[in-house]
Length: 200
Image 1 (cartoon, rainbow, N blue to C red):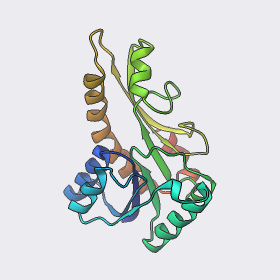
Image 2: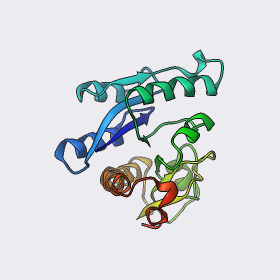
Image 3: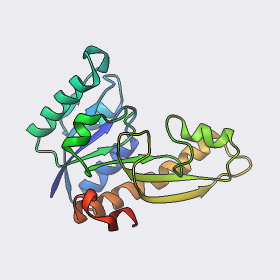
């Protein structure tokens, strides 16, 4: 059973979906740690309710990204974390963590990448009058949502679609897809060495 850390910055609905999958036995993993860069984020309460330890920090209190990532890396090592799972973490992962966890950092994004990377992907899709949106799960590299794609699932954008309705549709996909793909990845192993994971 692999030890994973979940990184999140907000309400933590995907965090909760992963917790639920672990608790029901759908996902054979041990959530060793929540890492959160927003001390006011609701995801911290979710972690507390699930008896999952948290490392919470403010980036501005560190001299540099390298400094806070070095501290994160030390905490991850203490918890024997093997994989990093990003679930609404609103910071780019830097060189320190990319090197230590090469091929073992995954992210979920609410668009069909490479379309609409970065913040507010749902708003971007609506503004562009796109016909389709969806969910992408990908490995993380040094860019913004540019890592190798593992899987995508799409959903149509209706003519009367609102931000709220599209977000609900996307989250419904995310909450089922992410635990199932994590199950596959943790079974296969290091994504850097297994191309089958990327073409699943």
